Image (cartoon, rainbow, N blue to C red; front, top):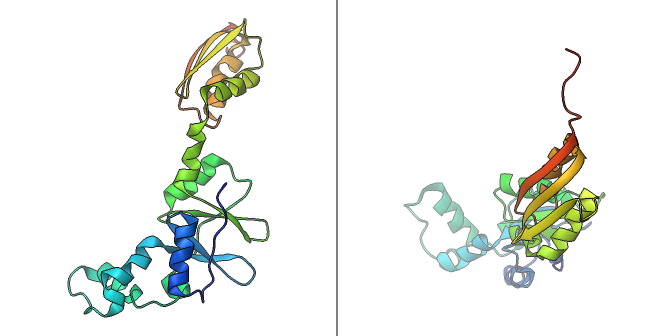
Length: 209
């Protein structure tokens, strides 16, 4: 969520909405109310209808079904409020990346509106923003893995190549060795995990029979 927050109001003029979209560089721009709460979004495809149907001057399309007729109606819009879709998909600022990715995947909208506890817009998240975690260097991922495993390098070795983490060595308990795959996969930027760890004590063994 490093991009500058760009938003418009319902009454924002068409051309100003286009300028806001270009400035946001996000494929869509949120529409907010007077309190800064998101009430919808304007997507680039909606703005393109003005070009497609020459501002609604073209005849209403006969072919193309309801979607084509909806685009034709959008082409006559003069304000962001007439173009917006909603309700917008929102997440709080402390939402985990995995949950934000799920919300975006489940939605048909091109971005998430990030809000504070009062539901005021504080940012947006796009697929590009979420995928930027894979720009991390292998060295930074390795350092985080080592801190997570919390063992001397002589006991556990960590190798990272293009985000793929390989673990070698031994831990005391089987539960920790097996949990390593789960934990390391949740480090931002990790693509895959090869867990070659062994263990000294099987604390997961079922006894008493």
